[in-house]
Structure formats: structure tokens, C-alpha cells
Length: 452
Image (cartoon, rainbow, N blue to C red; front, side, top):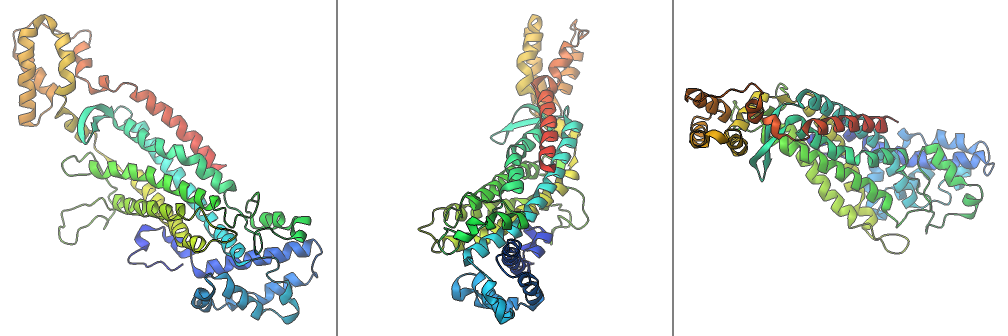
């Protein structure tokens, strides 16, 4: 698969982009064919020397990969010109042993599984680092107050630790699926021309042995038109995309100059503008967002190809190749970017508190009225005045209220700390600390699940 460096590659993982090459795909097809010869040899079904002679004749460097690409359209898939080239390279006496009881879909699907499985392992490895980075942010900011926002407007206080907990909870929800996919979600495909396999294959359990050689899972039956394995991979990737998208949406909004509550990592050259040198754009958020949007589109294509007629789809099978491979590369890129973003995220608690104070009177006044019920006639106008001054001067309500209160000839004290508690935004954060603790425990469990 060729990936355009200037247009497409910024959004995908560079290592995966290099791995998802025509060379690698041909190698994967070759590995499958040679594994079949190997297990046949092990069962004594073919002469002993066939495997070694096949390996010598079919060295990957002997294939004309450009020619395979140019001829692919003739049969609708790369396996057909690949098999033709392979047989041309083989000595005449061993040609009959190559590509036995196999059809082109077996070769393409199995090669796809071999190519994609290591990439998912890469994604899961980076997700471990993402979870760890979230854990650090939660631990450091479980008591950092900030404004909770609904419909993009300030509502009641939360803590930044809770916000990060909400971010990571979406990822934690899909970790079991990703871990399961890596362990057993990549299947061997070997059903022959119409998916009923071959009597000899079944008698000697050759598919099971090939699956073991290639470290792939063995399906219940060949899945030529049962595309649930493909849909499962794409669905898990898209769920991961949605969870990451949720995170970067918040971060990008919090990076706005008017809020300034967080900033992307200060990486030299990243986030520059071509015309405004003062700008620091949230480029990591943009890259992740773009990748996730494209993954949503890829899932739509794959979902629409899940139902396929008879024993071989007409175009539906072919339509999934690019969305699936590019989808894996996109999510691998997004996960790697998210790791960098969260590990180096700059957090500004003072800005969070300042922004929260701009609207704090909305949740403080009711409890203040209750606290000063004996002096309501004097205190209520004071609260109104403090609210007005705080909004006009862009100062905190609590600070303004206490300054005005100190000027009144009232006999009041806060020996029991009740007023201090009322004026503290943490009083209004409910079970914030407990949510942080629960999330930290869930992060540890998720990391263990991915590391198994």
C-alpha cells in the first residue's frame, strides 16, 4: 500500500506506513503459501525436499512486485498475479505442490491478518503509555478545581482529575476488546474455492497446523462471506477513535487563548502558523481529530460490506482492503500522537480557578444565603454587589465577597470553617476524589490486561 507522504502520512503512524508496503504484503502471501507446504511436509503428504526447494526458489527479492501491482486489476486481486509469478519461479517438478486447495481469497485474507496483527500490538502498546499518562494527570490534579461545562457554558465545579478520569474511562471501556483482538481476533482463512475446505485438509487438520505456524486464530469455519472478523477489527478501532476524539475535543477547547487552561507540549516547530508567528496551534489535537474522522468513514464502508452474497462477494470483499489497512495505520498514528500529547500536556491550575471564579456566584449564592440567614437583609445586597463587581472587574466572586464583607460592621467569624467550605469550589465537586480513585484502579487493571 503506497501512502502519500505529503497528504496522507502526517495522520498515520510512520512505522506502520512503512510496514504497510507492497513488499510486506507479498511477503505475507508468500508466508501463507510456504506454511501450507511446511505442514504438508510435516504430515508426510509431499516429498521432504519440496519445502526447502520452494523457499530457495521463492526468495522475496526474486518477485517483481511492481508487475504484480500492475497486473492486479486483471483478476481483481493481487493473489492471482502473485501465484502466477511464484509458479514461474518454481522448478517444473515442484509447481504442482504450490497453492494446493487454496483460493485467492484465502491468500489475500490471511496475508491481511498477518500484516495487521503486529500493528494492533503497536496500538495496544501505545495505549498502555496513554493510560499511564492519564494516571499521572489524575493523581496530580484530583483536587484541582475547574469549571464543569454543559452545552459549552459553565455549570458547576469539577476537578481536572475528574475530567481526565472521564476521558480515560472511554478508553478503558474498549481495552478488553482490543486486548482480545490482539490475542485471538486475527484468523486464518483457508476454505478453498467455495469455502468448504478439502477432505485431506480436514482429515490431517492442516488448517489448524497452518494457523499455529502463522500464530493466527483458527475460525469455526472459513469466513469468505462471513465478514464478522473484519467488522470486529474495524469496530474496535472506531470505538478507540471515538474515545480519543472525545479527549482532543476537550483539550483543543481548553487550549483556546480565552481559556488557557491547558496547552499542548512545547515541541520546537510544532503548532506554528505560516503567517502569524505568535500563534501556537493545537496541531496534535488536529492530527488526532482528522485520523478519527477518517476512521469513522472507514467503518461505514466496512459495515456496508458485511453482508456478502453466496460464496464470494462481488466488490464487497474488495472494498474493505483499503479502509481496513488505512484505518489501522490511522489509529496507530492517532494513538502515538495522543501518547505524546498527554505525556507532555501543560496544565495551568491558576487559569482553571480564574475561569471558574468568573461564574462562581451562580453556585455560591444559595448556600451563602443559608449561612447568613440571620443577616439576610444586609448580606443579600452584598452578594449581588460582589457578583456584579466580580463580573465587571473579572475577579473572583469569593475574593470580592470577602473584601466587601470585611467592610461591614457585622459580628461574624468563621471559626468552624463553614464559610471557607462554602466558598471552596471543592465543596461542590461531589464524589470527585472517589471517581479519581476508582479510575486509577481501573487504569492499573487495563494496563495488566494489555500487557498479558
